[in-house]
Amino acid sequence: MAKKKNYTILVKEHYRKQARQHKTALTSTMLDHNNRRLEIANLIALLRDGDKCLEVGCGNGAASIEISKARKLDLSCFDFSSDLIKLAKSQPLKGVRGKIKFDSGDVLNLNIKNAYDVVFTERCIINLMDWNDQKKALTNMSKALKGGGRLILLEAFSDGLESLNKARQEVGLDAVPPAYHNLHLKKELVIPHLASCGLEFAEENNFLSSHYFGSRVLYPALARVANKEIVPNGSFDQFFANLPPIGNFSHIKILVFKKSK
Image (cartoon, rainbow, N blue to C red; front, side, top):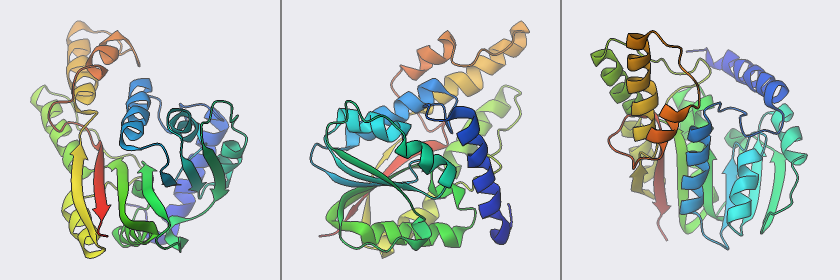
């Protein structure tokens, strides 16, 4: 793990590179097309027309725009990467049904209380590579919710990665490590911490489990036997991405919490 005093520099440099490479495209921060498509679809399914929402860590805004085309929201988005938020502000707004705005911001300095129906993330809090900082971020987001509001964490969690790697090892594949700029969340820490903030754990959605088992376990195992190169975003990936999710074989999942009234 990067030392706390250095991890912000490391993370900002990572997203500076993402901004240069992908600009306003949906591939920014996620090259797996099915992964990104399913992330957006599952966030949309959890949102309702009329929700006043805060997106913490919106990146280049591409996913935010797609969500806002599907739901009529009052959506405020922010990111701590100046490179990415500049791109977000340049996103075309054609087709957006409600309101959307992009600003620079840092969840560790978030000081908003009782303002939003929904606060959500998309692989953001894992960029805080220190549990104490992650706790502070979770606390700040919980305070920003109205009574009865929902916190939607689309994040990477350690238990899913452990299950995935156990399956990979059973077919002779090496374990997949966390990304160098991420600290995966631990459910056994997150759930009680948010309970102390007045948020009840409501739902876990392992929406990528079948896709990851197919694309990260079966496909590479078969490709190795056949001595074939893996084709990213190919037909094998597409098949498993369209299956109902079974099991807990992806580190990326959604946890939903509800704030007491």
